[in-house]
Image (cartoon, rainbow, N blue to C red; front, side, top):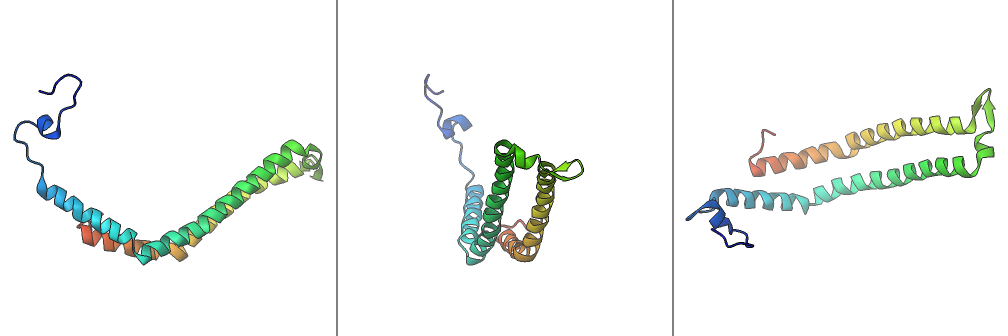
Length: 137
């Protein structure tokens, strides 16, 4: 029994004479080594680079576009209130364009993933699954 104020060591917590599961730890070590090998591979770096090459500029552009809308709505009410057609004003057009740009960006992301990353990512996943014995995932 551990003393007051002191946590029990793993072997104490598991009971006297407890032996760690060596085979489980060995398999975990092999699996971790396989993950690290894939992570350090050129193919993984290429997939990650393609992902970052699309996502970071797209996110910056989209957030910039959103902030432009918010800033324009708060600092230029005259501009945003200008009539475009009938009761439709610049603010309404910009707001609807926010929705349209969201769907456009989603489509662009899915297309980019399908054409530039999916096959390479699936190849990496399969290679990793066969090395770690998880082919059924």
